[in-house]
Image (cartoon, rainbow, N blue to C red; front, side):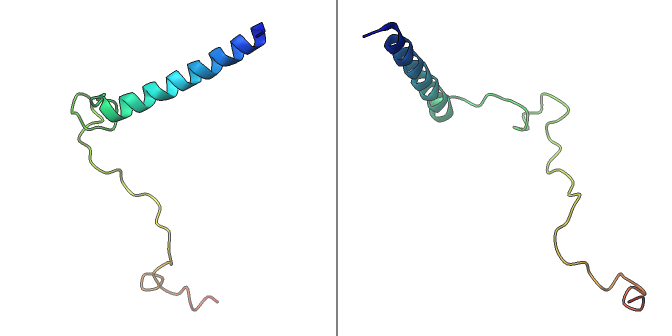
Length: 71
């Protein structure tokens, strides 16, 4: 076994260890209290849902006065 094999096996083991740590924290860890959890520790917490800016769909025709006449 050459030095390249040792480096390759080490890289694979490091990547596998990283993935296992991510899964371990995701399954068994406690909440981190990061932004978006509404913990109330900062000004971003407790604001609720963000304001909807864009609506996707058909434009209602009731509010369009004269738009049909212009065609």
